[in-house]
Length: 199
Image (cartoon, rainbow, N blue to C red; front, side, top):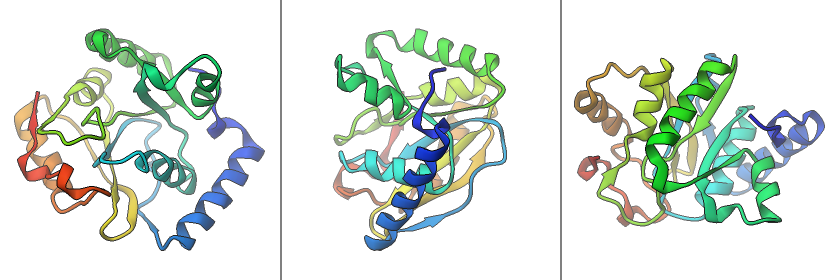
């Protein structure tokens, strides 16, 4: 995996101070703490706005996480792409989702420490289904899933708990969705965990 801002000591420390200051100024609070596990998949929900990205990064800095995140390939143009990679981005070709799952599993197996953020919705627009790639990545790699969130109604963000997939997709997804019940995105009309289906 490539070098990111999260592994650049001085800049990472400055980014954490700035992130904590901005979040406090805006009235946000950080809940939970950094997982003790060395390897895990981090899902971030709900994803309803472009603002989710900077808020998520600030929460990651505040919790001292070292993360990689997945984004659509169009977010990585020639010049800006280098910055996005440095911020932990991994360009995703959505037409090759199966290969993406296996390549991420391989990355986990080859690394001693790795955290990858995978948004289950796959888009900031209104969705009725969650993609299950994050689940099969965690299951295949034998790593837990960290349930991260941004609740704009309470101005709170963080990591709620660690969830270990059992292989029973339907039952596991119901438990995960229960965790997000009541969590509100910036545009709450675009996300209702109780109505989300999986595919």
